[in-house]
Image 1 (cartoon, rainbow, N blue to C red):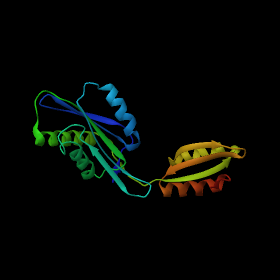
Image 2: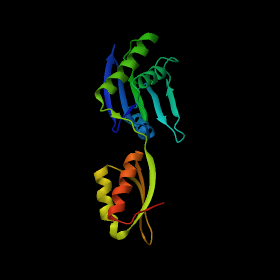
Image 3: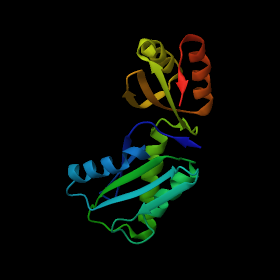
Image 4: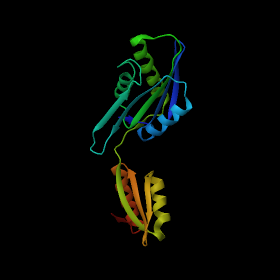
Length: 193
């Protein structure tokens, strides 16, 4: 499976209709949809599709035709995501009507092609399941721990401070979290929560 870490877009023109496909990490979906609607007030449709893995390791999928004939846009877009084995991603295709009706087959083709274009142009990353680790360290060790986290590429998704030191919520594949714990045990006194 594959995923993306950045928002990208590509445009397809079909019989004067513009199909601007935006591919993004799923966590950006709501925010990007809102900003695209504000940025493109004259667009006729905002067709969407998404796939992500929930907390129970289940794949959740969805799509919307947003006023296009049923089954001609959202489902074909979702099928392209499935066919490319993409996960934790969303696609929003902004459509400007060009005055010529494309028919159901033409719409399916245009939305599928626009989605394929943005996927081909995007930097795809191999998907790895990430876990959360809550760890704490003394104030005197924050610099050393930060250095280790940076070297291992582990994301700090939340930080809190208490009387003793820093409490960190770390997110990474389990093997990276295990490597972090091994390295940090040698240098500092980190306590796994």
